[in-house]
Structure formats: structure tokens, C-alpha cells
Length: 368
Image (cartoon, rainbow, N blue to C red; front, side, top):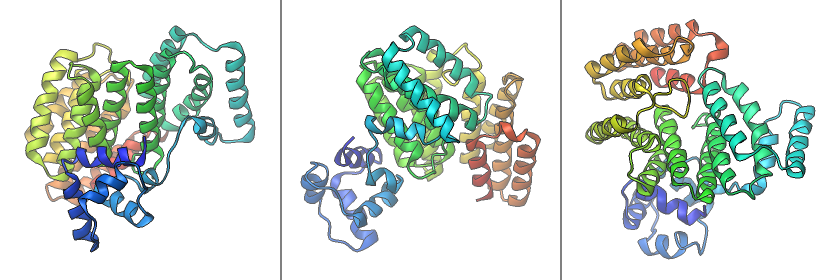
């Protein structure tokens, strides 16, 4: 995605015209930017904003500066993936796997779908580090098979899972991988994948409370691609609902929650333990945090109780999510010390190897 397209999508996600964006920059930073300059120079792609203006856009549009400063494209897949290796010998293994896949053809599309199903299940119980190391190797392999259009869809879903192993607030890492996943899905021509990848990015960033402008952008893109009820659309709507709640736009958050419930009634999953699924208990987890952020104690408690009854016992991390939501409710009600203590106790009760980046970000939200 070119910088001009990114600026266009981010401002549209906030409902801003080019004139509104110019006014906001001028008001906050004392500049004399015009609507015409944004239109004819930046968004047309004729020039890239200076570093000063990139910093302004980063702050106003809530997107990591590193995302605005540079592009990540397919040529860098291998280097980005291999850079996660913990030792040179591991990097060597990744490179060997990649070249072997290119020479031998690699797994079939059906084999890859089976791998995706396994990773979707494993994500729910394994730590971020374990998933990151394993998926980085798969990305190196699938990168060598992208002559097959179907595998762009596989790659997009793997990249989305990989992005989830980075916190959304960690510079550009998570956001760049989500953006690249969306581009890969577009290459596949598979609208279901295009919606799912963007929706998953929206709910991940919205739930974490990170890069809210990007969460809105992905949510809007998913909804524009298709209004057909699907898990991708549900994730997109709920991601935008969380972003609205964090911004204090309670009316929009509640409206989107109602929209999400209607989509869920049609598209809910029977699968219980996959990142590619949204069963009843997981929708209740989404609702629990959203209601806690809105200060709606009755709805939050109802959702927490409903989720607690159905969270599979092999997924203790998600029970910890519910306890963190209760800690957030305490803190938002005025008992910050009690909320922080409650949240820390919940984290302590979960084995450290089960901790996720999202849980740590929730703890930071309670403390803030």
C-alpha cells in the first residue's frame, strides 16, 4: 500500500475529509497545510510527507510512525521471518526449508489448510513465542509457493496469526504484518479471506486498545468488501466497537455491539477451540471487555458469567481474560488499587508460559 493510499484510508476510517485532516494538523501544530496539498500531493502519490508531517499524521491518525515511514513487501518476507530466529542455526534451518520448498514444490493447498487448522487450535493454548517461532518457518516455506494463487489465501491467514504474536503497540511490527496479510489476501482473490484477515486485525487491535485508527481502517475495509454475515465481518464490527468505546464514543460502541450480535446469530461457530472460530463463549469474552470499557456493569457481568460457563477447561488463558475484565471494572469504578490487585492476582494464577501479549496489555490498561 502506497503512503497516499494509507493516509486516505486512515482519515476515512475516522470520518474525516481532506479539509478536516488539514485543519486538525494546522490547529495542533501551527502549520498552514491546505486540503488541496493533501489531495494533489500526498494522496495522489506525487510526494511523500516530510518526517515532520509523518509524525503529525502518526499522532492524529493513531498509527505507529514506523508504518508511515516505510513499506514492507514480499521481498522482505524471508528476512522478516528469519530475523525472529533465536540462533544462526535456526535461521539456517528456516532458509533450508524455504529453498527445499521451492525446489520440491512444498505442501499441497489441502495440506496447508490442515496446517492452518492446527495452528488455529494451537494458538488458543500456546504462548506467543512458541507460535511465532513455528509460524515464521511456515511463512518461509509458503513464500516459495506463491505461484499458486490459492496459497496467497493461506499465506494471508498465516501472516495474520504471526502478527498476533506481536503487541499492537510495538512500533510497526504487528501493523505491518496485518497490512501485508491484507495485501496477500487481495492477491488471492478470495473475498472470504480478504474479510477475515481484515476483521481479525480489527478485533486484535481493538481488543488490545492499540493503533485504533488502524483497527478502524481494517474494520471499514472488511465491511466494504462484503456485508455477508461471516466471522470476518463479526470480528471487524467488534473491533470497531472496542475502538469506539476506548475513544469514549459510547453510542457508536453500543450500536456496533447490536450489529455484531445480529451477525453472530447467523455466523456463529460450532468449533470451540480455534482462533478461526467465534463460538458463544468467545463472543461473550468480546462483549465482557467492551461492556467493562463502557462502564456497563450489568452487561459485563452477564457476559462474564455466560463465558465462564462455557470456556473449554483446556483454555485457562481465556478465563484469565474474564478476571482481567473484572479488574478493569473495579479500576474504572474508582477502586484503582483494588482493580490492579485483582488483575495482578489473576495473572499470577496463570502459569507464566500461558501469558499472552494481550493479557499484559490488559494489565497495562487496568494500571492506567
